[in-house]
Length: 139
Image (cartoon, rainbow, N blue to C red; front, side):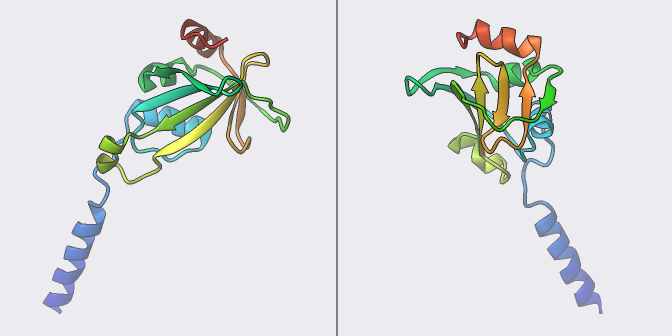
């Protein structure tokens, strides 16, 4: 009987501590809530121009998440994106989180709409996000 409890305690301790990053920062919380992702750690936001097929800029994830502001959720099935936002956990940081490590968002600059890659979640961008993107040469 004692062995059974010790074994159960051992299993709980070893499986309960399997993810070294159970506490997410505000960055991951905001992005996970907005875009229905499950990141434990985001340390890169890479913006690509889809027409030119080139990287435009790499954003600070904290500044990006802080700029999201109050976006209005919308339904759209006909988004023609100009840019992709590749949210990523770098290889070096993957050891700190075993959760989702990448996701792609699509952005139409003219319509000012940002969506998940599968277009299940879409928003009209907030003023703060539009300003932040324009300040980072995304127009």
